[in-house]
Amino acid sequence: MLPTKEWLDGLKPGDAVVVRGRGFNTTPRLHTVTRRTPTQIIIDTGGRFRATTGAEIIGRSVWHPVDSIEPLTDDVKAEIARARALRCMNSVTWRNLPDDVLIAIERIINNGKDAA
Image (cartoon, rainbow, N blue to C red; front, side, top):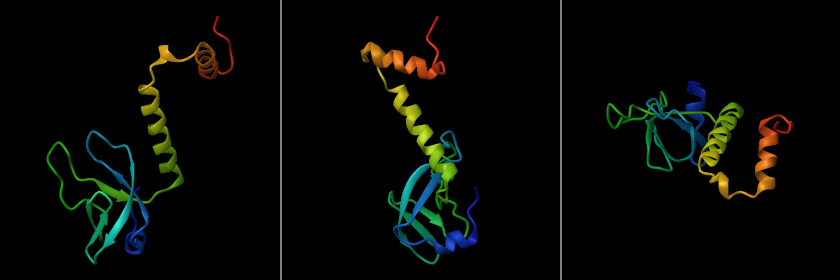
């Protein structure tokens, strides 16, 4: 979602923003505005974005194109929660879980049906 001029103009320190990459990693990341100047919006990582467009001021390389900021909407919150859940699932050592937990997860995946 492209930021509107009204939204960008209204950003102030303490506001939540979403940073979305344009390269390989387009997963939204939640950040906080720490400072505002007439021409820049600065976030908690030190990233600087244009106050007129929301585009990152300095793209780091051809492999890391310019990021941009956008509003935190319910859809973006759901996207962040899904990405977090996927990262969590990727880091699980499934063989170390107790049998009852594995069986419960299998039932959830199979919509409540026992495996045949």
